[in-house]
Image (cartoon, rainbow, N blue to C red):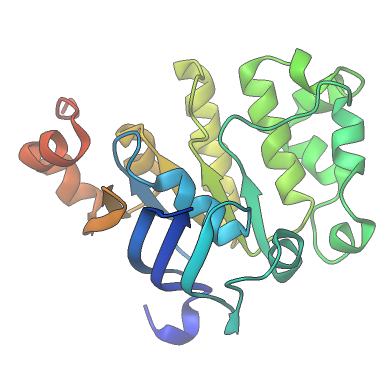
Length: 243
């Protein structure tokens, strides 16, 4: 990919919680094609997401450039305004707010700048339209993930950062999630997907980054990782994917 096509460029990124180093010298770029970051629990994947999204802690050093502008050190709302949407691990919904209220929290200025409106996300997720008056935490796991994605889409991002989106979801719901992500990628939204589920990661992204102990230890392709049983065991601690 040519440098001009890269939207998000991370270089030498280090993220600390106090004196504890959680991410060390992460360097990669995201353009028009989905990229997946995989790894075992505790390897720094969520910390990397928080660092890119500007959510503190952690304390961040290094470079996070988006569309040519440096974002490292900026507050999270500025990073959102720049065009990076964030779907956090665990959804992070409010029990006191309905589906509709979650969506109406988003600044109208962000909604008006692109094609994603409340009507558009209801068209993408008809189930949310049916449940618009239901509290966010009263939804099923799949519905909660739909709402978390819909909320991020209303900021009209150019890159969508998704942290463990398949976590806790039934296989059928995971399949629907994969199709939704493919639809978004087909519309030109860059995807940076952090996943422990290797099958989801390889279904969505051809380019795979493997995190080990806070570092990106391997950059490979989905096909190569699926074919490398030793790498699956060594880096991910999982049995090889079924043929």
